[in-house]
Length: 141
Image 1 (spheres, rainbow, N blue to C red):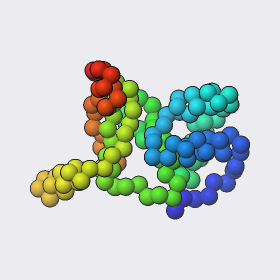
Image 2 (tube, rainbow, N blue to C red):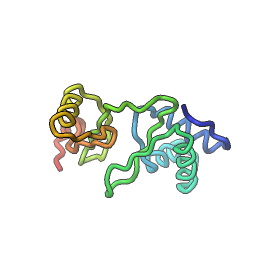
Image 3 (cartoon, rainbow, N blue to C red):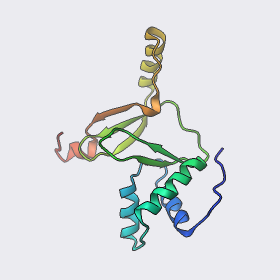
C-alpha cells in the first residue's frame, strides 16, 4: 500500500493529476513539461523532478530507467501492485515504451528458470524494435 504524501502543493497536485490521467502509460519529464506548456501552466523542470521523487518515495509512481541513452520513464501506479509478468517494448524510432503481458513469454520465462536456472526480472525486460505506428508510417531504424 502506498504511503501518504505529507506535503500537498498545487504543483504536486497538478503533476499527480496528469500522471493519473496517463495511468498505464509511461511518461518522461519532457512529456510532463509539454503537457503543462500546452495547457498554459508553467512548472519548472526542477520542481517536476522534485515532486516525482516524492511521489516515487510515497510509492504512487514507479520510475523506469530503460537504458543510458534515454531519460527515465514514470508511471502512476497508485495502490496497484506491479504485475510481475509484465514486459516492455521500446520503439527504436519514436522511443515509446509500451508495457505488455504475454502468456507465451511467461512460458519462456518458466523454461529459462526450470531448464537453465535463470530467473528473468520481467518488469526490467525490454524488447527493442519498431512500434506499429512507426512501422505503418514506413519508419525504419
